[in-house]
Length: 331
Image 1 (cartoon, rainbow, N blue to C red):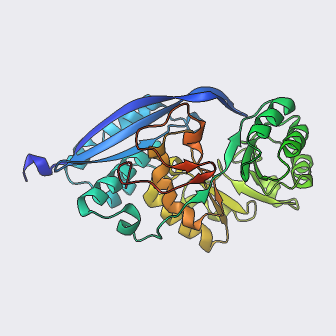
Image 2: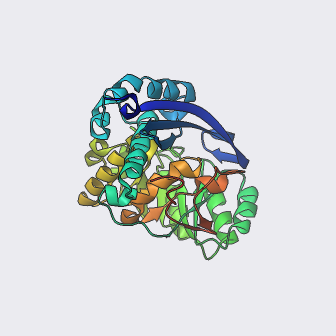
Image 3: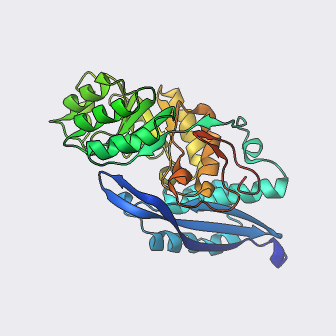
């Protein structure tokens, strides 16, 4: 084997400023910190991006180290299929999985969806996120986005009925989905669900903390409830059937597009509706997720829209429509 045929690996941490700040129940941030993996062979380079998530104990530095630790295995011929067992689900595997798919697409001259034998993704309407804040501040932010057909509203516990009522008044025509990010309790669960139902919210995402969400199986849910932090990969699906109606698939949780597509198939077979979601990230993170959109009822891929600047060759967004990636970006 010549040296040109031996895959080489490079990885780095990158930072992109957020337009303003992004606030959820766990706190606020002003930049997106991503980790990019690049796998090169025969003059071609495949790229993948991930966003380490502190909620799962991930840091950019540890994620970077985990990716770099795979150099010898990749040089030894580690395949994308073997990668699934060689690394646990999470951000690091996501970056490598997507980089390997990108490299294979370049090497074969196929688009990623043809390579993986998946439906060709088309343009989809993505949710646009309204950060958590006081009702008046959220109403003001919503008013600026009220022309968008789908809004995702971040809630955070006490005062959420007032927040969602103010948001609905500011955007009377938009479809609303809500993300509580584990901030509700059994004591206020039914009150908050009723407040969302009263203003026509379509879906509530992760109202209770993961591992403490059993109450969802004991109440009559007035609207659909979606698992996020409670669901990671295919192994976590079956126990959720009594508690949730939908699952939020994120590539940083599944550990890449390979598992995300398999998880989408498994979730549909179990009767779950699918949301394809993302972290605040650049278009390089979002591009692979577009391959899950043909199976998704809800598309929440607005990460680049929340940045002050995206990377070069970024996804095309036409207001709330997001389009499949050009090959110059990924896949």
